[in-house]
Length: 338
Image (cartoon, rainbow, N blue to C red):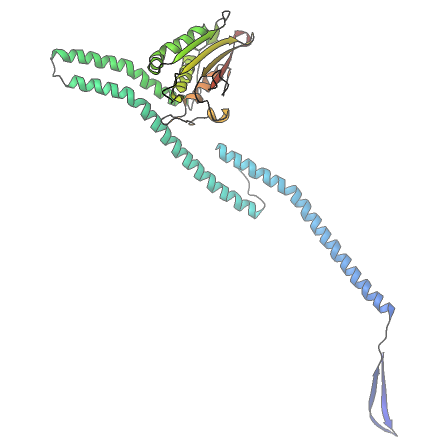
């Protein structure tokens, strides 16, 4: 409180006396604390409301945004159309743009590598039969027209063309089969005869490597509907791969082809070798353009699996051969399951 009193002497006023006194009031203190408490409570409620609203919005939007981002990445990897709407978070949108740049660079480098690898593989495969034809042609040119040896050389050139042109055509067809649907024509064939023909077609290569091949089959095995020509391609590819995998010249290649009816609905064809085995999971082993060979185009096993799947069958690989090498197990349905 404040007390103001005039200073008088007679009728003369000389000034005022001001006297203050501090007042301690519990009431005032309580009011101040109440105001502070109310303000703090309002601030806490406001913060809680804003935090709860924001957390709820993020809890609802964040998973959807992440799902959209994952869907977009999967579509980009599969190279399929994906009209992805802009992401609601700026950081995620920037992240998407950076991922897009990385994926674009990955696709570009992958395509260039595949084209280079495919071209290299085709040129390597075609070079040998072309060399035989070119050599026979040069031998013809050594003798002028009318020379008695020229006719013999021309006959040799014709034979070289007959022998090697189908090989070149098969290489081209194999390359095309890597990116198109394989068509098969099933007829009732003796599966054992198909396996024997595969061995016969590769006999020269097998003899050159000194390979020992055994062919095992159930005596009661019945004819199985299959495309013999296409299945010969599969078996031939497996035989050649086995020989190429055996880089140790001191080791005699051991190969086995076995045929067995696993049930009334399926027949199993197994090709085994004594090589080093495989070091890739099946999903990568059968992938197009995946090759562990120096000059391979990575289409052989991919096409082989496509041929078996066209027969409504399945093909798997592991390292469980009886020699500890690679084993390719092929299962195709019998007529009863078609």
